[in-house]
Image (cartoon, rainbow, N blue to C red; front, top):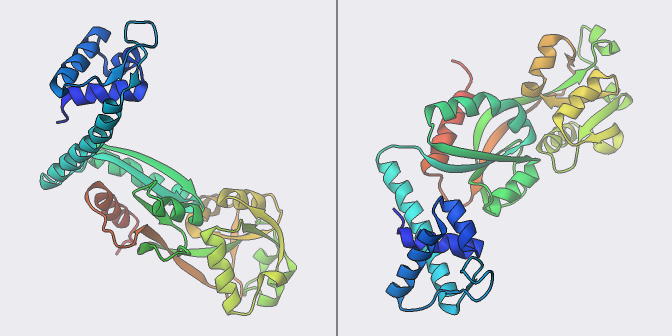
Length: 306
């Protein structure tokens, strides 16, 4: 829907080269030059300084008029893209680009089972995703680098809105050879201080949830024997499998290892840590279009069976 001459103009202005713009647009260089000349005649001003480069207008620079037109050309392209999106929504078509952010556990253990099915149902969506810990994803959402995010704990900021995605439980895992696996009753809380503990790094939603839950029953980090701080749940799983210590991880994350028998869950008296994975987006805004469609799809995909 965008005016073709303005599209050619933007391509030349962004590449500062007729040749590179022609390659990007799959046009001949003379065709690009012709479109620019026609636009300059229509505007009544020169848009590019062709004095540089090889003398044939390959390398160029914007004139003052060209700089002004480029600003409006970008705005026009954005408005056209918004119009196309709104029209698609009227036709109930889910399409376009969607940038997601997901904290580590969600990205590794929940999203793989969702993304393939979503793209199969909505093949016109171009999806990209960034991952990090909860604080990093919250920051990416607040700064507008992603449309919305999925995180493991409440964001520590007031400029974001959240909504539940799926329930989760953080369980204590041990190596199958650990002495605690022989117990028929929960491990006394006092013994939690005696074992080497593997924890996620600061800023992790999982760590924040574990620390809060333990603090409510009188267990502080200072009294725990934290021997390693690791930057991923996978690292904790591997460390516990190797016998380096015990660790709290999402039941979603531990599912495969529990099935294979390479890890075991042990219960500690008085300790039950539950949380919700949450969708997060800027406060004061509402999810629409493709973002809203993905949110509905993801929530349905991870909903407990009735």
